Image (cartoon, rainbow, N blue to C red):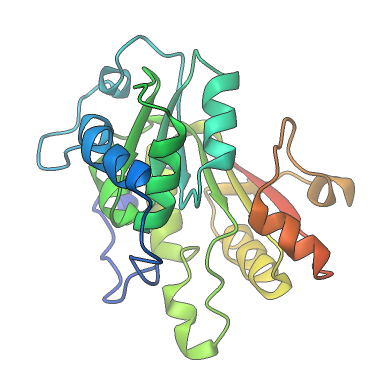
Length: 238
């Protein structure tokens, strides 16, 4: 999508309302607080500095490609992907303090050379990243903002898809998972209406079967127990 990509490079305006909800939950455990204080500053991306021309420069060792996960919750999926793919670089975004605390505490004092983190609005990070720098973007179980008056706060929208189109390499994948049927249909409509993305599905299994190596999450397990059926969508940057 050449035309839309050049438009996206102008950095679409951000929503006047955040795409995420509350920033804090229940009180952190001492181990989590310590991990936030010691590990997060060493892993956090500094967006006040210019982005590197080569995104691999963000990592402590060379990486084959770089993937982004937006809103990683407690980090279950991100941690598994990072450990199973040590040759790839991963950037995780989570503005919810308790979720970030869970992930950094799970690192047990280690600084993975293929991980960087950001704890604020993902649109700022997307606007900071270089063109054609990512091989994949994961948006897994995002807040569905079910009330119609809040739909403008859903992360999947034309402006953010323009952002994805700019930073994804041709052939890169945008993966979206949700157990909320309305948001799944919303995402299908938004992505199929955007010229940068092609939905990769030939049969029902292509959205009913989890991604290869999928570890599951606690939120997903709860959704299944409550009778909600997740969908796993993949869109390719054309």
